[in-house]
Length: 410
Image (cartoon, rainbow, N blue to C red; front, side):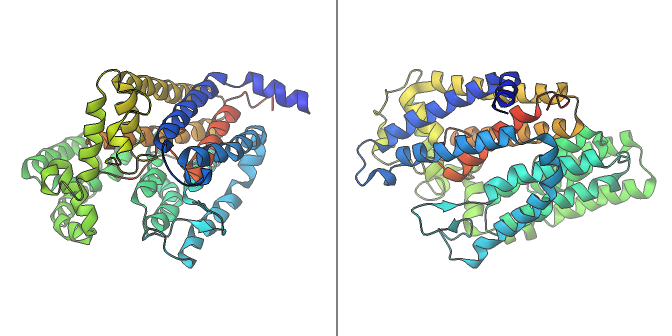
């Protein structure tokens, strides 16, 4: 049995594992710098806590890597149901930081089940799409997959955790496209959101209306459907002020300060301003390990997780950021290439979904740190501090390596 496991490990894609270990090392080095000079016991410092969480993460990686493919396929629906219960449990406990995201066990740290919902939803969706010989030319074939992702995403959104809810939703479109859904049907899923976002600027909304007309004419659906789609999206645009009113005040400020940080420089825009200052201060080669003033004078908020890339930029410079971008790009491209090459439909879909999750995390974290998008708390895979996220990331890594091996051999 051990020989079989070792053989399976040798046949897996070890380059992805090597990249992951480098990224984890960069994260630990950065967290050690952040923890330097902190008072308190070891377990109050992010570096030592991350080092502690790395042990169960590696153990979970080994388990997920050696679980047979047919076992994952067989029991994923049961795991999906169990996951729904887990993300509901925090609502029964007390609020932590005005949210219901963690399950507490009386330990110095909590368990965040929504981190595991990301990859569980992907696998459940992959099983559904691979098991059903769907006629993807019909829009109705996409309804069940959308429901599979909407249920957990809606629960997580009410915790509230908008960032994680978006990550749960993101893989559904690439996976539907991978399985053969018509691009026009995917356009119909995205169109309402774009209509709402562009409605706040008349020129953008006019351009979007023109694009809708072109796409509808190109797809050539029946007349009633075409008219309903076009005017339905226009109506959603008109409802944008109502939807804006439903946002919480802090969410409105995050969006507004993205375009004009001077509106609230000491409030909602503070994180963006300090992050951009830290990245800019690092220059090409950085100030050196442990020398970041924005970091060690505590001007930079949430530096262990959401804004860890700003710490890296300040202390190691733009070159370090460029290297990180290269490593993540290689990781994601390699994952997508494995998805293309693997013969098993179920495995291919899982790899596409997991690759999309990593892509979304990396894009949002980098873009948020330099003020390209509103601040949304999403950590950087394998680098940012976070026990549940580190554990979940290593499980996803194991699934990528596991399911990319020839299914006929194991």
